[in-house]
Length: 304
Image (cartoon, rainbow, N blue to C red; front, side, top):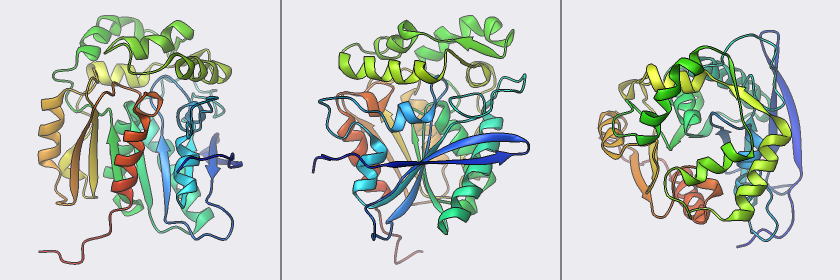
């Protein structure tokens, strides 16, 4: 099924204390009861709409939000503090714990606005760490949790080993500059060729339209404070999604994390031919399929 027509989006705003946070929604066709409500959580170096609602001419279903909305899900994303259209006024580095605070505020708004009981939560890269910490703090709000390009202790991660060399620089300031060359490096650092040029360029343009710098907090946390998540405190059904070539997610690190997840309704999936940014890869439909399957899994009838 290819999505031929655009689905209109709706902007929303909520507050975290005095700060304004931007949310974006794309819903199923009118009259359909949603199969579930998805909250997509972005990573360290880009806002939410470029990640989850990217439009690339000639690339069918490039927007993950539209793909899932066309299949009956109410889809949402939000810009964390310091990113995109959300508030950037505070002189802080917007670390992972602060991102989990954003998700607490954003999820409260979504649940109240839609009447949904719980959310299907997907996070990628540092967004996965934020999402996991949010699930630790508010498991009552999470129906299912998907962690893509996740990292637990950092063991076996060449990307983090290289990034740690710049840790003093990241610690010295609250924001770091980004440009088109930086965005391109996301797709060349692990395994060149996993994403096509048109998608990389569209992704970079969408990111840079909103930000020319981003907070340093998630980089500092991922280089010096791991682990920031405790698998034993995540009681919800969880999937760990790892791209075959992802340099952030060390395979054995993820296996050990997965083993300690207490809910027996859990999955571990390796996605062939994918490096780090799953939804911007040539094999993006693999990532969509894996996530759709997990989010569509019926609750167990029998439990021991």
